[in-house]
Image (tube, rainbow, N blue to C red; front, side, top):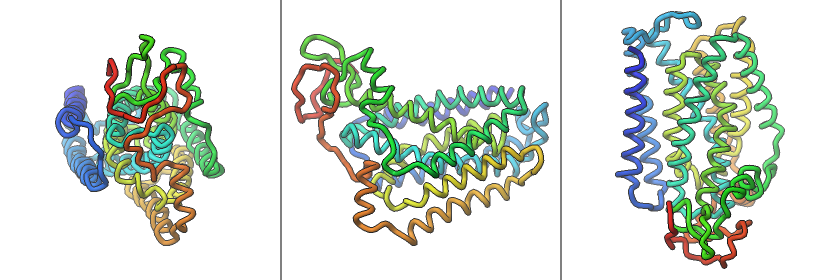
Amino acid sequence: MSYVIWTAFVAMICGFLALDLGVFNKKDHVIGVREAMRWTAIWVTVAMGFVGVVYLLYENRVAGFGDADGTHDVLQGTEAALLFLTGYLVEYSLSIDNIFVIALLISAFKVPRKYQHRVLFWGILGALVMRGVMIGAGTALIRNFSWTMYLFGAILIFSAIKMAISKEDDGDDPHDSWVARTAKKFYPLSPKFHGHDFFTTLPDGRRAMTPLLLVLLLVESTDVLFAVDSIPAVFAVTTDPFLVFTSNVFAIMGLRSLFFALAGMLGAFHHLKYALVALMAFIGIKMLASHYIHIAPALSLAIIAVILGVGVATSLAFPLSAEEKAAHLRRHGGGDHHDEAPAEHHAESAEAPPEPADDEQGAGG
C-alpha cells in the first residue's frame, strides 16, 4: 500500500505546481525580493510541516514505512524525521551553488525580469522528473551493489576538490556551450525575445527557438550536473528512497523563490563556497566510512548546520569591499535586471535585425 502514499505525495506536488502557474503566477510579472522572501518562508514552512508527516508515517508503520527490509533496519519516527530534515538541509544548501549558475545564465542572455519565473518554473518541473529517475536508479544500485556507496563518496570528494580549486572567472561562454550548439542544429535561434514564448516564426517562415527556450535547456543541463553531486550527498544521509525523494523535492520546489530572494545579495555570501566544499568533503568521507563508522542522524545534522552556519557567519563578518562585490555580481549576474533587453549574441542565422522590444508575440509558445 506504500504506492498510495507515493501517489498522494506526487499529486500534492502537482497541485502546488498547478496553483503556482495557473493562479499565483498566471500573468508574467517581476518577482520582487519581498514576494520572493514570502514564498521562501512558505516553502520552508511546508517542508518543516512535512517533518511531522514523516514522523507519523514511520512511527506508526503506515503502509510499511519504517519496516526493516534487505537494506534497511527498522526506522523509528524520530530518526526518520531527523534524516528527512538533514537531507533537506543538505540539498537546499547545495542548491545555492546552482543559483549562482542560473544567475550567470540569465545575465548572459539578458532574460527580462518578468519572464525569469517562467524559465525557472519549467526548469524546476524538468528537474523534478530527472531527480526522480536518478534517485530511482541510485536506489537500485545501492540495493544491488554495496560498493555504490564508495563510488558516491568518491564523487563527492572529487567534486569538493574541484570546487575548492576552481577560480571565480572559470567557465565557458554559455552561448557557445555544447547544449547551445546542439540545440541550434535543430532550430535556429531568434535574435530577440518574443514575450514568454519558447518558439517563434522568423520572417522567412522558419520556426525558431527564442532565447528563453535556450536558457531553459541550459538550466536543465546544469541541474543534471548538480544532481550528480547532490543526490549522492542525500544518499549519504539515508538510503530510504521516500526520504531521499521527498527531501529533494521540497528543496527544489523552494529553489525559485530562493533565487529571487538572493538575486541581489549573491555577493553577501562569498565564503559560502568554502562551506559547501567542507560539506561535500564531510559527506563524502562519511560515505567512504559508512561500513565502519556510524554517525547518529542528530550528530550529522548538527555538523552540517555548523558548517553552513560558519560559512554564513564569516561572510557577514568579513564582507567584500564595494569594488569586490561589484566584480562578484558582474561575474555571477546578481546585479543585472534586464527589464527590456534583447538577446543578440550568437543568434543562429536568424537574418532579422534585433529589436529592443521583448513583448512582441511570436507564433508559438
